[in-house]
Length: 353
Ligand SMILES: CSCC[C@H](N)C(=O)N1CCC[C@H]1C(=O)N[C@@H](C)C(=O)O
Image 1 (cartoon, rainbow, N blue to C red):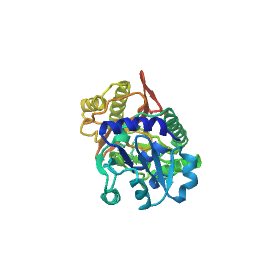
Image 2: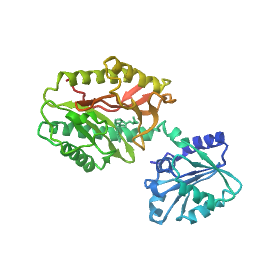
Image 3: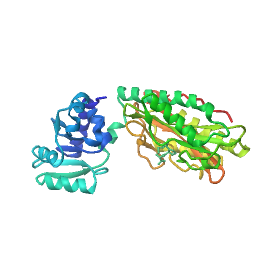
Image 4: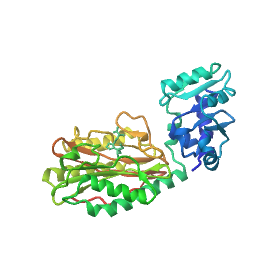
């Protein structure tokens, strides 16, 4: 998926604002966003006011030509750096300070002695928060597949099943459909539900358990993310109360999603409701995050966030409550922020417990 043209123009405006003549892009998700190249771990991009060159090596000569509309230079370091150096003499060159390693910066200093290196943070990530139509279609397709697989596997979430077998079944069905896991599948049952990132274990599910299943499909480079907490038999009164509190918080936060809303205010809506139920301390993470080429990307929906929602963002809303040694609940939906509000992209049913 090649989104290069519009993003590059936006990026050049941002570069101008930051006072740099060129930008060396090394962070894989950003390389992919600018080029469409699907092996971005082995790619870099040099952006100047009138050129943008994809650097990769000879393993990808054909692939890069097929996938990216940008001019390409096939070489490996240090030839890559030497080639780029020709364009950079006397220039202010930005680099991605939040991802370039110390060794990577030493290389740039060695091979570009005539350039002034400028540390920049989050410039392309900021642009990636607003998805293109193609990106929205890709995320939608990933979520549709995740919904389908969740529905197929839900009947297997019963007493006697192992968490690991449920995760394996989900992964197998995703892979058969040409996708992969967006992240290690979380299947956290009974007391393990108190771990927000409780990856599937050998635990055998028991009657009365709640099971938190957090899964995403990775399809054509884009991710989805959704959590459902399901009941096996009848959970305890305490856990049913927690479930309904989390659901109330989730529904209230979703209802408030629209362009112009501060991400921190959304987090507060959910947190205040859970606090009202005595579960403020139990909500041990942020309300949500952006989703796209990465599972976790901007905007950040947390109390300290400066982000403001805008149409075209794809975000999760995922409050949770975690009671050590007792259990936990999380309910998560994937949403597209639209001009007049939101569209929920995840359609798996939420249970009444
Ligand atoms: C390792 S990917 C986990 C995907 C999951 N849906 C998710 O984003 N989670 C699970 C519970 C918390 C939340 C998370 O990791 N949030 C991050 C952004 C945080 O720092 O709060």
